[in-house]
Image (cartoon, rainbow, N blue to C red; front, top):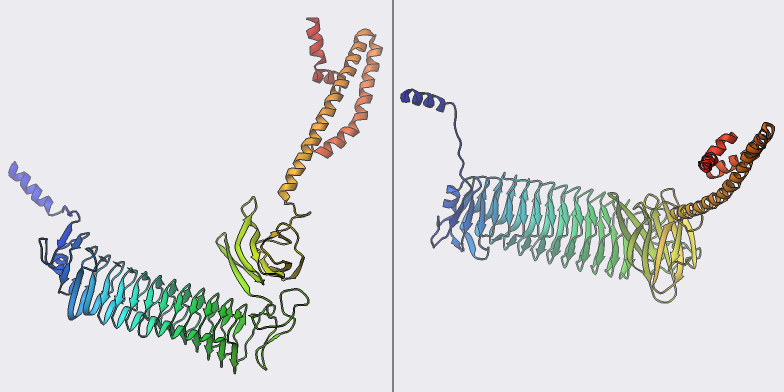
Length: 599
């Protein structure tokens, strides 16, 4: 019997396999002390899915290959754990996925860290120095590189044909090129510091749809360079003390916004680049604030170019539209060589600090054009700096432009009882004299009509300059000192909001109804007395007298019908008068009272 059972189990065993997986382990590595292994590679070879390799301080003279998924390598600190490639090819070669690699220094190799078709990895707080390539991504996507330091390499971080990677908070210094993207798309660079690299802080080559935000590039030859690279977004970067701050070479359809470009030889430089948007940037203390060479069809608006040698310089660059920029205290506001461009949008141009024209019609626009050259002019020069404020509501962004000769602060939105924006407010402050604002309000943000108050009082002067169906331009003045300005939707009538009128109307209605109730209560009492008189007549006289009482009641009802109908229409209430003498007596309780007296 036992033998038969064994045969059955043996047969079943060929069909059913039980998999038993070990719990993730922690493996320790120490180059000269008690641990599981003395080399990192031996620990990797022994590791299984989900294992963690803890590496203690020391110098590991080896090249390692990570070829197992879901492994974590954690060093005690990158300052004290050195993996030395001794002049070989790869110091760390990764051809696996879901790897965490944290707290190491890689040095003296062809590649400090090399990722080959590897994804979903996290490389954090490492140092790669004195290599040909500090960190190299080859055909690798969805990786995160954060808090790493790459210095003294030919290329700090090199991304080749790789997409959807995030590089944040890394420092690349004293390399030939700090961060280099080649043939790569849909990557994000944020908060990286690129300093003192011989050539480029960040270089994009044949790369598109890359977001560069909040990076700092200083003391490089090129702070940020894009060559043959389209549809990238550069926003909020600080670029200073480079030969070229931001340089676009044959690169189209890029967006540059909110960047601070200062103390460079060339702040923003376009060469052979078209259909780009340059908006909201600050270019100051450069030899050339904005420089265009062989570049056309670009939109340049909302930028502040101040204290440069040239505010804007155009060389053989035509068909650009240039408006809403502030050109302030530049040694030369502009140079326009063999270029024909539009210097306004048909309604507003730029602010030129050297413009000396007048504004006799009080609209914030100079009465005379600002001359560019013999072929061009700014037809609508602004009388003061233009400031732009962004408003977000219901996942939609709005821009409010204000031309103002005062300092503006504390800009904010105000909301109505339905949590919709129905006003904007801000403070203005300035020296002696008359202050003015020209403000553009989008109708979809605050619907017209509008009213303006200065410290809750009417301004000295105000008017609607222009409306085009989607925006309205308002102009108003005040005496210079600090004031609070509110621009709000104007309810009709007056400045009261409809909710205030609703409350007032409700109050009036309640008073009227209360007065009416008192009045009809008095009528009720009088009518009750009349009915009692009727009742006495019915009880004291023959039937003929009873009939006369009934006729008297019918006559009274007919006289009141007209007044009752007017009352019902006026106050929208429903009144059910008694139609017979007996019915009225029942409503007033006369019959019940009589029965009570009898009992």
